[in-house]
Amino acid sequence: MSDKHTYFDIRKPENTCTICGASLTDDGHHPSVLTEVYPEPIRKDYCHTCWKRLQDKQFFSYWLTKRIAPPADQKINRRERNDMLLRLFMALHNQHNPANATQLYLLAHLLMKYKVFKWLETRKSDTGEDSLVFEETRTGEEVFVEPISITDEEIVEAKKAIDSYLEEELSNSP
Image (cartoon, rainbow, N blue to C red; front, side, top):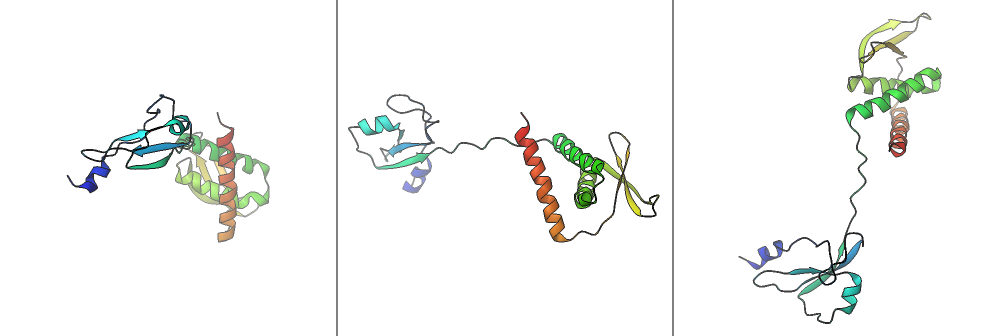
C-alpha cells in the first residue's frame, strides 16, 4: 500500500480524551496528533488540560480538530408546510385587504401546486370582475382569488414575506 493511501486510513476523531477520558464533543475544538506513520497511522485526541501536561511530544503531525455542531433540525413535513401556508392564506384572505393581493395570488398557486387547492374555473364575480376559483381539497370549500399581473419585484417581496412567516412559525413551534 502506498503512503498516500495510508493517510486515508486515519480514523475519525475520538469522542473522549486519550489520557483522561474527558468528553471532547462539547469542547468545539481540541488538539489531535498523528504518532506512528508506519505500518499504520495512529491518531490520538486530547483535551486541552492533558495537552498542556503532555510530556512526550514526539509525534509526526498535530492539528486542532474542530467540532462543528450539527444544525438544529428545522425540517417540516409536507402536511405541516401545507397547513402553515393554508393558515397564512386564510388569514390574509379574511382581511379583505387589496394590499394582500400579490401574496394571495402566489399562495393560491403554491397551494394548488401542493394539491391543497384545486383550480376549478375563472368566474365573473357579482361586480363583473374575473375571479379565480379554487376548491380546498380537504373541505371542498370554494376560495376566490383576484387574478392580477405581478412584476418580478412583487414576486420577490411576496416570497420574502411568506418565507418570513414560515421561519417565524418554525421558531414558535415546539
